[in-house]
Amino acid sequence: MLRVAPRTAAEIVQAFDDVVAKPLQANLSSKKGRELAKRNPMIYTARGTTTVDQWVDRALEDWETRESRLRRRRFSATRSATSGSTC
Image (cartoon, rainbow, N blue to C red; front, side):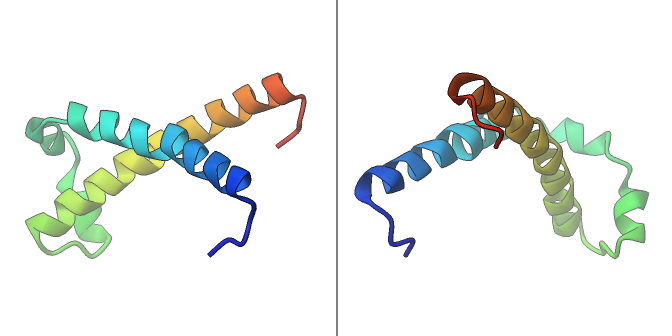
């Protein structure tokens, strides 16, 4: 529990939805199984991946990590521009 005011909690939930949940849903829904074949399985093998399920999980994590960084940068830039803050 965050122990914040209801309005602050609603803002946190909305920001999470805008920055994480909606883009994640859009990103994953646009992925095709063939795109996994473009990811070099040897990279994941070197990282300790031993099953196809682990390979798929790590490939999706890599996509999301890259996409999340871009979303956070865009969100921070937009927030700074609209609020004048330096977050």
